[in-house]
Length: 137
Image (cartoon, rainbow, N blue to C red; front, side):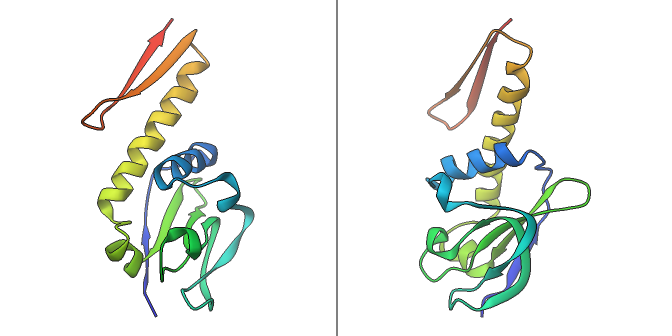
């Protein structure tokens, strides 16, 4: 049975998180579960685990022989990432992946916030994977 690791984050906007997961993991909207009340995660055998999450990607979408991946909302509004050690090593949902998720999330939050104040906002991903955001006031 694989061990779950919890990774703290500063992620607060659930919609930007979900959009980032869809883009980064190539998921369809129906492949991400959203729960107001946190639900149990399941391991690769289908056994219920004690860990719970508000946003869940079930194991079949995480990778072969993986457990569910979850994002649990904390009292301060941030989401902690819950991922099993096997998925972190075998499917590379590691610190580098978390960094990519945070970068994509931050760009989506920036665009969402900026759109409220500007006429036009465009996002470009450069060849070196840097995200460039241009605004027209």
